[in-house]
Image (tube, rainbow, N blue to C red; front, side, top):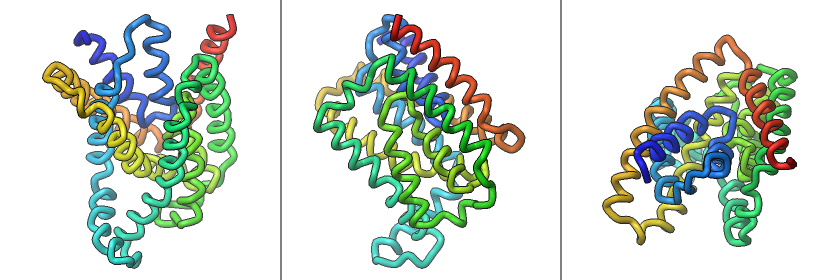
Length: 267
């Protein structure tokens, strides 16, 4: 891969992973709309590692609490803030892992990687996000996160396996529907991304581990660093903007892109 191609993939992944605009959709569109070769699973793993590092660093105070609670959780006790947070994150991740395995084993995931599918999901779920954001209550915070809410958000997150949906976008949509305020909805969505990215990265990593070479490792390292920087900047900007701006700007972008893709797909 050329350095330009690596940087392009890393920046797209980094910027779009945590914004509610679908990173997978943008990465699928890249070769379809530009004629560039698909970046391959090795680069996918690398940029996932980069974005994982960014979200862990940005939300380190929450991550540290969850990690500290893991030993307590493993003994069967959910009686500390850390063990409770770790337990809820695990519960919220189970649906997407199970659904992802089904799509992988059946091959259905490949059939969903089309411009038409991405166009419809970009448009449709963008409008759903706008509706929930404008009409949802704002009376719940992260401390109110319950097992019931974790299960519901896990089911919402499962829908993100359809390209163009956006994992962060759909979980934010679900959190707004449950009554979490904007910044808290984003915070929960970002924390939920950590075990999900770990699981998907581990699965992809096992598939590419045997074929890695020095050139691939070098390209992957470059991609991971730039994805980390791009994701950290995007996270910082979004979380600051949510203090004064709704999700409407992202919805407008999704609607415009979705309409453009549908025109391309059907003409």
